[in-house]
Image 1 (tube, one colour):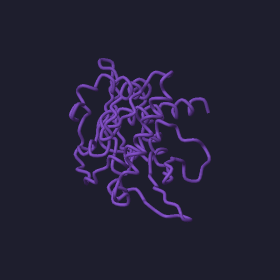
Image 2 (cartoon, rainbow, N blue to C red):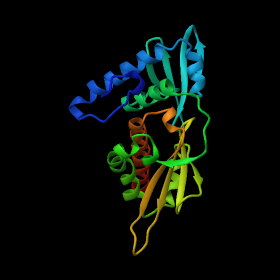
Image 3 (cartoon, rainbow, N blue to C red):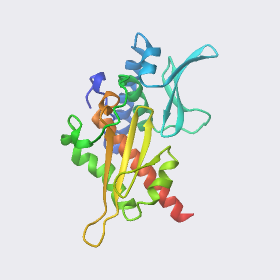
Image 4 (tube, helix red, strand yellow):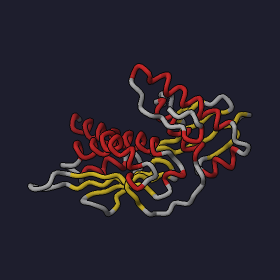
Amino acid sequence: MNENMEHISPALPDQKNYEVSYGLAFKLASQKLMAFADLEEQCRNSDSIYRKVDGSFRIEVKYLNRIYRIGLPEVSVAFAGSPEEVELRDKILIMHYVTQAKGTPLSNIKIAFKELKEGANYYPTYFQRAVKPLRDYLGKNPEKLVELAKEIGGYKTDLGDVSVTVPAFSRVPITLVLWKGDEEFPPEANILFDSTALDYLAAEDLIILCQTISWKLVKMQQLKKLA
């Protein structure tokens, strides 16, 4: 893991190292957050809300259609209005988004992962963790993607046979594309990004984010089958 706080990324560690590796990533991100001279301005960069409530400060961030609260100055990440525990992986993604945001306006130009800086180097990992599950579990029934994506704030777009855009964070839209295939060709999938994506999350973070989205959709689909 790179300890340079400009490029903190929650690389997936082995299970035995999970708590140590993720714990360190969260600690470093917390230190970076509290080091901002103008935290309110940084919140504007990420389109999050910085507010004072009952004498304490907090940041409110929308992530996958739910509101999260970052408590300050002892940095904590929790759901707004829910006692359930936030997964450490999600805490780190939220912290990275807030601390790395440059405030760049969305270009509305979609690019593939390989077009991102260092994207080609990470592509095999990205494909296995994020694209392959989407293709393998939803590729044969792509029409279900639209309904599933609505539960995490997604909406239908016009690419491939079926596509949706999920505003994972306010300034990090993720577009999922499926092709059903036929007797000659198997199903295919792809995930596209706004060309400004690296102004908000590092490539390693985007892998984790896309993996999270893909598996959320797969699990929702499996639960619907069992219902």
